[in-house]
Length: 498
Image (tube, rainbow, N blue to C red; front, top):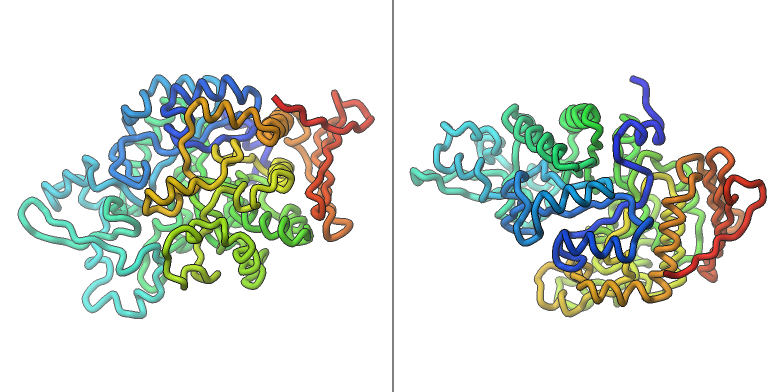
């Protein structure tokens, strides 16, 4: 099978462009989808090419990640009309939870009522049947890759009073589905077709690594089974001009496996590696990663979750990660809440929670440099809405919410957004985003050079267009040179504020 280049794959995918994608909840910029559109029109014209709207469907928990149905927009956010209007001006991404559904969904409620007579019975994985008599053993459980304490199941009661254990990797509102079953794949594809008809260009497959369950394994990203669904959905969506994006927090080699198969992935190495680079003022590891990382990827520094620790292992080793955590510990969510001390040790830290601006101790020069490096990196950049507004840790929200991620999920009013956009830092960031979107060089080749440990140079070239970023990590200062209108002379970019 011939692998297409990054540029060729983008050109084959309809509305998807190599322009910065905003990540936002449907209600985080003004309160709903209509105000999101207003905010983008007022302050971010040219700065945003695409939008990842985090789950806007009716949901029973986890801030949208327990979807009851994909066929409706939660009335508190708006209607399909607002979604389609956003799709006129931006390419859109939304989430599909391929590992689980809400226990409130029609399919599961039908299963509770009719049990094995339900057409959806095979969608749900029976825990006891999966393991068989005498299992799981302590060794089985020790091997499992788990996100919660205890065994990954919940006990449900059917209409006739019978109880069964069903596989449940996350919260009790989120029951796992069996993607090896025909009925489940049909359910996913029917919903994908619906989303396509509403203007969605990219579907993010949430918690994709958890879909494979096989005895004798850790039941996470089990090969070769893991490739069956992604290949099927990738081929199905590309025929519709859509892109599939699996969300997998795993070792960095996993992203290379996706790239080898022509499947787009996330660069989850970059967030922690960037912190390590900026705090040590040493660019050598970062330069090496930029040289070998996948080209068909979406880059992030911040998302609605935290900064992954395990994702960057090898590029940031245990000792280096511990050093980073110690430097930013006063900005992490557990610095403000009682937490088991063991959770503070590196090997227990799954993700680090705080806004990216606060994790850099609100150092505006370091933060703007981090974004400049991200925008010059291979792939399509994503910017979380809190990061786009250079938001600081929301301690008030954190104290009122048991979820540590609340520290980085502040909901902004339109007036707050207006005030943020008047700050010099956000003004320069928006100008930098516009340059990244409008200048043609970012669709071409990349060269990375690290002549001294504290000096990083990255160039992007396409045809007569070239942009070069040179930075000094000791001062956090950087300069971007570019050939204007393809002319031979390089000139510095002046980041003019709004």
